[in-house]
Image (cartoon, rainbow, N blue to C red; front, side, top):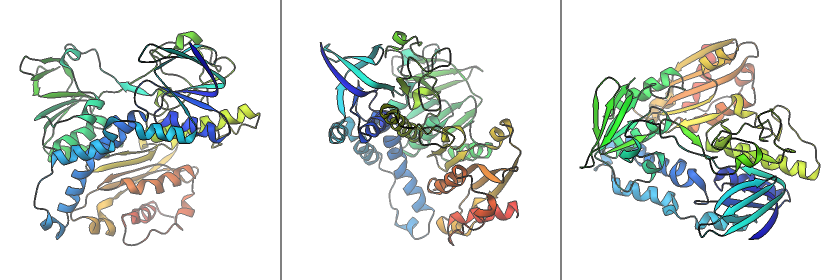
Length: 479
């Protein structure tokens, strides 16, 4: 068995692990990544990139059909094979050569195989050929193994070979009938994508559509899905699943109803990839979410950092925010603080400090790429109230903004800002409407920067753009 020593060892070569290792190397440390699958992780091959590629062509076609002149130039329907082909290219045809080359160029060592923590600052890697390598860290081990799709213990479900987010993102063909169990982001986006690609889609949304968003946003997306031909069954709960000898999937609902489909997608949540990484060796529970402090150090059952604080966790696995961009944000903070501690430098761990992930608390931006798009940052009105903030909620019809009517005929949308009345700053912002994703960062800056409303009056939106909604919201609020 060979041995190697590095300053930092990272379990998981997804975007989060790559960023941790890159920050460590840029800070003058040596780093190694351990990966059992494809370098680049879930986002590159089965989530962010391929799913948005599935959605984009249909969105462009819808946009063209909403504009006279462009509408007349559209002579055909969506080419599903071409969409899948473009998706394949964005998933690099499920090959990681380019990502491996990047690691090499960044000076990050790669060890392929299953990594397990076997002792303090020690990781054992078992390759596909059974050969084992021992890695030792001088300063830190970082868990960035992400999550997998949760498949609930529903009678017959596993035997029916359901799709998870991975199969939905990488499908080689479009099923004639697709049933979706769930109503969250994955369920909503894949319902949008596959309906546009020609599937007859049925969505069993027990808890509603996008239940964590502002209610008006979920209602608008539900309406649009139905307009696109999706059968959205609010409150419907799957009780059992059976795939018969012909390949047909039959889902029986709790009220005795039945849904038939060619494929069933389960999109009801995520589970941490921590079952087989050696957590037991350091007194932690295998398969559990990892709890971290403000600088991403893993905490034990007693609430103190494991060991002398050498174990970190970044990204989905710590259950703070299950979003790639937020995981990369955590990774930058973790990589930088590991470097600071290794060099004996000061740790900037105050609110909004360089070495903490403060935005995880109240400034998380997210876009749901449905039709219409849902873009939000910070707290919903309900979450702000639950947090004890004295708020005022300001709403505006996004379709009434001049730039919206120019953007598309019949533009429909809605905007909401949630104001902390004591501090006179925005703590939440939600937009739902066509192409709202690119409007979100302005709101993110306002929330993170805690920009006073009086100062926002001086941030003049260009005319005629959809961004003029900022002025309209401020006018509605009043000075």
